[in-house]
Amino acid sequence: MSPAQGDSKCFDDDGRLKRTGTFWTASAHMITAVIGSGVLSLAWATAQLGWLAAPSFFLSFALVTYYTSCLLASCYRSGDPVTGRRNYTYMDAVQTYLGDFKVKICGAIQYLNLFGMAIGYTIAASISMAAVRRSNCFHDSHAKDPCHFSNNIYMLAFGAINIFFSQIPHFHQISWLSIVAAVMSFTYSLIGLALGISKVAETGEFKGSLTGISIGTVTQTQKIWRSFQALGAIAFACSYSLVLIEIEDTIKSPPSESKIMKKATGLSVSVTTVLYMMIGCFGYAAFGDLAPKNLLTGFGFYNPFWLVNIANIAIVVHLVGAYQVSCQPLFSYVEKHAATKFPQSTFINKEYNLKAYKLNLFRLVWRILFVMSTTIIPMVMPFFENIAGILGAIGFWPLTVYFPVEMYIVQAKIPKWSSRWISLQMLSVACLIISIVAAVGSFAGVVTDLKAYKPFQTNN
Image (cartoon, rainbow, N blue to C red; front, side, top):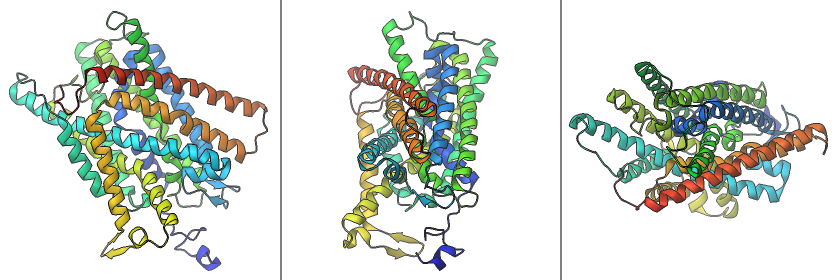
């Protein structure tokens, strides 16, 4: 990079084209990543934990996510927060602060988690698509037809849509998709909230108890496993750190990227936490122990059917955006690694100019294969609520807590065994224990579902 290029109005200090992201676009990216279809399982999660524990965990996970996300945002630039060298991805930051060994561990966890999230999004989208058809069927038959349909055709449809959108080359070019997805996420979340409130108003009572679902409705063992699963569902709903650095790399400066990112994090965490607690609590108040695992597709609400349909369509649109936001870091990593390993390959490196679009054959083929894999796998294992718990457990501690804490300790030069160092380590250990508990419960749920599930059969 020449000095002239670095000082240009068209280029940033690293020689790349000027970043155009703002506080609002960063907030939209984060809300798209945070408010996912996991929000629809929060009434069920609240039912497992009860009025006392559930709100406490919502607030605790939100505070931990906000705090560690601010630590992570500070690690975007190495050294000086304004002029230091940029870390373009989460893995770049881990490489800079923690070295080769930990970056390999981080990469395996992050990209496995992103792959799993793509599977979860595919399952959730297909459930919502099928719910629209089922809702119409119920309405037309006056609830006389059981309306059982397979989700497989809808998974294929969602995959086809994402094959198209996955060809958008870079994270910087999907801001518009994130904004649309963020609007859709608020749409279905608010509809779910409104339906819960109306149900409570209709019955005139708040259902539920301080300790959650009662023994008798479920066995004591089931109560334990379900409580563990609920922790995983809440963790999944709060986690977005694995794409935070990539989002921060879209922000223009001055002011510094970390300053804007911390403000955007504060807004997104505040908004989503309030929304989560309201949806979870009003859903529990409406249904009590019978709260469905998916508030809009579990058919706790049948009417007005057109409003439920709008909410499910909004879920599908949002999940297209969430899929792209989550998968772009993985796409970018594979393509950069391939270009570095095979610099002379025309197939990998050559760009063909097609009017407004640059075609790269490797990007075309690899991304199509990726989307196909995330479509075929969930056709065999459509256990969304338990996948959500597993993803939350796998990703929450290492990506949301451990790596941000360890990187910040190095960046801020916090002395070992100092009071602040001990406090950060205690936070990390506490979150590790919660992650293990949530993972155990979620795996137990998958085992239970596998006993009854037959692949490629029509869902009830």
